[in-house]
Length: 133
Image (cartoon, rainbow, N blue to C red; front, side, top):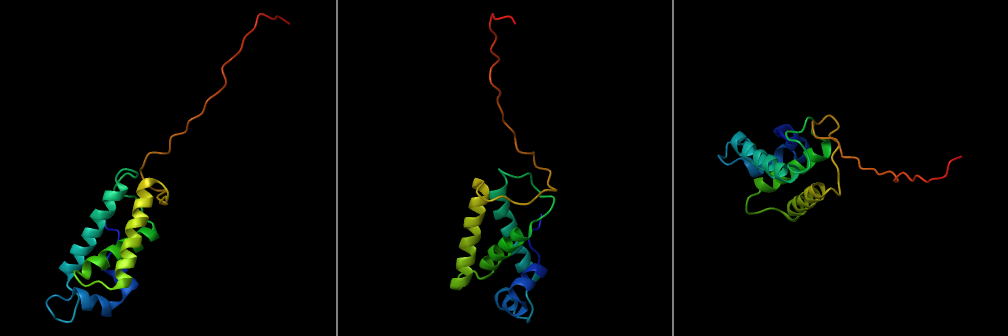
């Protein structure tokens, strides 16, 4: 499942930035193969964190997960020279995914096919006496 697309990256970071970091053949346009590689990398990384807590693929992708995927893909696009902002947003995305994996943050995947949470309860033991009324 794709958590972010080229359209999401363009919306978040703009065409100019994407051309700068994803135009490997220098034709003035972001290379589709480079974008695909980075978004697939982000998808696989996210799935690794979500796998134990949610049934994959998710039925719907929450908007905050799209933003996290964009930050991860952007970091990958920068290769060896990410800016401080790019590094900070990537590290924040990874920490957020750790929080999701640990259950400190939940995803709104109400349409998901994941199992419902288990409910536990107990009742007091019955007490019987020899008293007859």
